[in-house]
Length: 294
Ligand code: NAD
Image: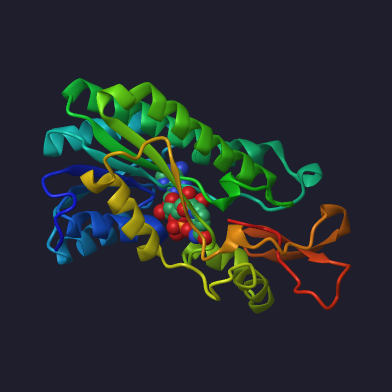
């Protein structure tokens, strides 16, 4: 057990798997009471079991973050159970369908934006309302991605949603700075989670994606959770409106082979999602790269 979040009450959305699950457990280990939000009841209860096994206390609230009434109820149930809300990690998100814009459906755009962007906005709205009402400040971390900082051919909707989260974070931070509510955003590159298994499951996709990370590996959910707990803690008390990039060197690598006009799509279908890989037709001796980013 550590003490960074001792006595605090926190929400983690998308806590039924991946980064959200590890964050929920780490919130608990850091001393917070943790409310886990997600759509899948069984997996949500499994996360709460892990929270309790780590010596913490938690509650699962079935929530679809794209639904205003459900997000409102999430915050209400948090306050009913634990009396207040101090910290939140708005992490829930989907990858959507990774195909070029010209082939993308309106339905896919709506679904990705509704969950990744509107969902984050709804969480901010209800969390901030509660924090303002109770007084004493608070800390919120939103989940974006390196795809909130750079573009990626084939992942336009995902990129748009994550760029949107970056803007939301800055505006929310400015609006609430004088109230002591800090709002920041975390931007990971590829992290080993079920989402990444869906996207880069096939060995050749995984190899391409690994090549984007100078550190030579993907990140782990716990590495993201560690940063989020710090951002939520009083140790990060002067940080607001900022993004923290966790990318194994991904964005520092200036050796990208674009221009994009030199890239051709190579499509591969996977169960439930369609992934487009973009490989360079030029510079055969140079490293091939998968241009899709998380
Ligand atoms: P994941 O699929 O394991 O987790 C996503 C979580 O969000 C799941 O618990 C899922 O049930 C939940 N979720 C999805 N739609 C929801 C909705 N409408 N309401 C409530 N919960 C919902 O994947 P992950 O990799 O852990 O992703 C977590 C977040 O991290 C996402 O926002 C993702 O975009 C972001 N991210 C992931 C990576 C990566 O490489 N894994 C990199 C950068 C950013």
